[in-house]
Image (cartoon, rainbow, N blue to C red; front, side, top):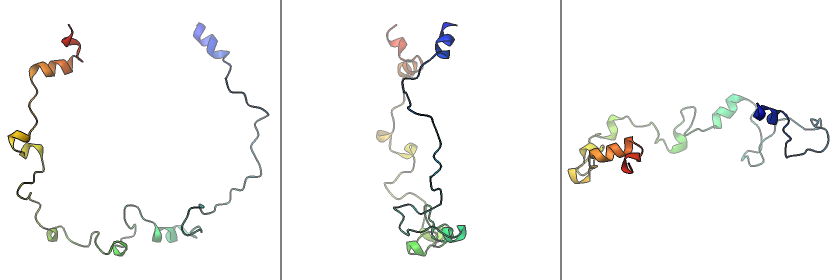
Length: 119
């Protein structure tokens, strides 16, 4: 009960001077960003999409990257089998490089949050 009474009469530490008014003389017309390379806005979304890129061309053009993206089929890229000395999963590694299995006392220490070590 006392806590809610304190919150109801709380004084903010920041004091604002003057009445809050929304400025009316702000120009909201769209314009290009000052760091924009073209210094102009596109006239339509279609024009924007012709030049836009998001992790590569948006409209299927691969010429911007020399025709390398998506120009070859998966079969032409070669085998997906690992070469000699390469491994795709930890379970394929030789035993000396694999993770050591956890012991019972380590599992119990983790599950108890470490509290069982000091009991």
